[in-house]
Length: 215
Image 1 (cartoon, rainbow, N blue to C red):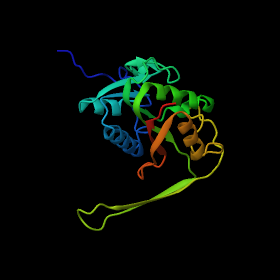
Image 2 (spheres, helix red, strand yellow):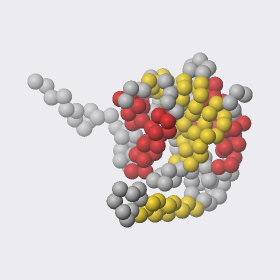
Image 3 (cartoon, rainbow, N blue to C red):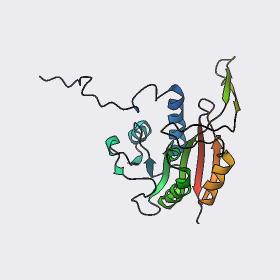
Image 4 (tube, rainbow, N blue to C red):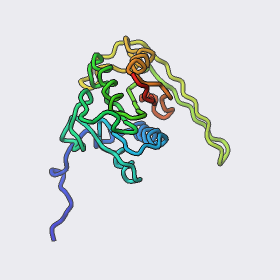
């Protein structure tokens, strides 16, 4: 009987399957992504940027209908496509999840990507973007059993210039990209901002929950 265990040489190596990538903070972000999507009660979800499929796999396992889309065919998405040219009919999905994707595009393409997402969604979008800060300090305390712990986060923003790291072309909070500018672009692309926050457990990820307005 042949062993089905793969040798190390047979395992596909990817930075998406590495605990240096999947930090505790990122796992917290996955939880918030799932919660925000489920809160929208969608019938059909599009995930743009599949990563390691942690979120889409979870959603499918609990019975959600999910289509995945990515320009990188090696990640084996359902549809290989660029966010700037999505091969779907207008109003195809009740909700779109686009987490930590658009910062990889030149900022001049940000609005174009938003408008394409606006075209394809029927109702809502869960968008996350990286948020640069000088530092942040987290405090959590729990004194009494069965009472939720109290949490406070102090985040210090700094308008500094960040060097291009071959991944992110821009980030919220760096010089020239304040959060107010990003929100203005989102609203001009036809969206209403429903929620805007970063999780206490991961202030690096800015969550922007959007609803579709007609242009």
